[in-house]
Image 1: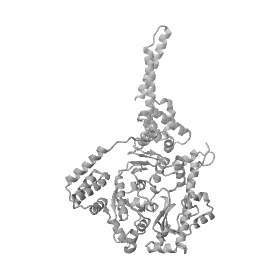
Image 2 (image 1 turned 90 degrees about the vertical axis):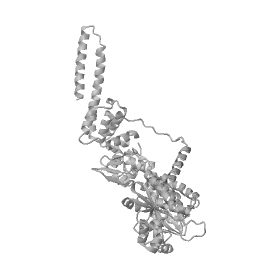
Image 3 (image 1 turned 180 degrees about the horizontal axis):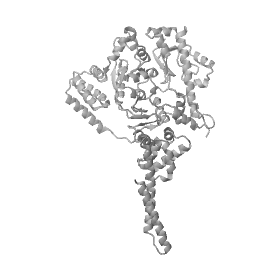
Image 4 (image 1 turned 120 degrees about the vertical axis):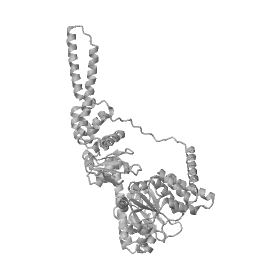
Length: 601
């Protein structure tokens, strides 16, 4: 098939792509004996790790949600890409050359290469903007502005901060000279849709937005010379094929290792807030990219942190954002604290006026989200009146709903009563009534999504033996020397044996090869779940294979014996030849009895 990735390339991916390092970018893994690694599942929220990665056998399995597969499947699921795109991603990451059986690369890879070209364009543009800021007279005003706000040259270099020239036609001319075509630049996000020669950013302080691998994929630009009230303070790159705002944090590439180490993260609203934290050594801060906080962004850090610290503005919009963020994090069972800055309007101002020690102290003094909310509700409502107390309590109930622990809920109900001088039993009665009222009005809506129903798979003696041959591929040679697919009665065991034969003949017989060629997700889950359970060991797998062979052979002999017994019972002796024939049948039954008895030992 033209453009088909060669089996040698897929084998090389399975053998050389380090599944632990790939999975470790999404969830923290801990070695627990040998080459077994465990962590919290990146596919569903949990705090007790049930996600297993077998580095020897090159697969993963979650005992909670049953997600399973090889390294290619993992990248497909996490990054929401096709099989071919996942291979391309892993090949680039581990410097594995991709070879094709015939013809050129598939169209999907050409598309992915175009995304890589856009990233290269953004990398080059970011370097050019940075040069304008640091080295030119045009960028001097911007450099003076940003250094007066307390950022050092080292920080400017680290974050590659730059300046977009005021001349809105300059960028197009510059990129044309670098051999970028107008058609290519049209969809780059760097130019106006209506006026393709006009730069999207001009006379702005430029903040490159990096992907998790440290490549520039977008920009945020701060205005320096506002011309009117309609000028937006910040202008951010639009959604692009290589840049999804909902899935990106500013500075995540710089912060990810520190987030894992400290098991906490600071969520900021602005780029400058985030950068100020980093300059003060608080390098586990990230910022949203011109959007409200999203579930996709929380999922980036969910499995690495115990606590989220919120550092949003103190104005009305900032308080609303804080409340929404608290509820979103709590629904994912993440603890939350709120940083209440004093002495300046933002971290950069505090850093400039009071130094990094002061900012660090304020981070360390962050308060629990429940305390923050009760303080704000006490300011929002007249809690010296029954009506005010009721309104405050009802709003706090939304927070309690988001908590995942009954103990936490009970504790916060007590905290609410103490804060507003309410009787604990009255608070709990109202909360219970509210819950009951919600349950009464909840309507079960039909699910329009097509349900995927997998047939129930039973782990019997036949299937168990074939899975053992998956776990220990050398054993398959023994299994296939004694059996063929027609010997199996169980349909799942028969399908899996057939698949192993195909992989064996293709000389692609590792566990990842087998999993990637299995088109039944339910069977993949059973295979990875059984192997992950540790039921097969070096010292017992041979016995499992032999038991399966004996089980099938014994069943075949018993079936032959039963058929023979029925034939003997129905046999009518008339002639001497009939008598001799019956004698031979009886001798054959005796031999079958002996063989069955031998296999039953």
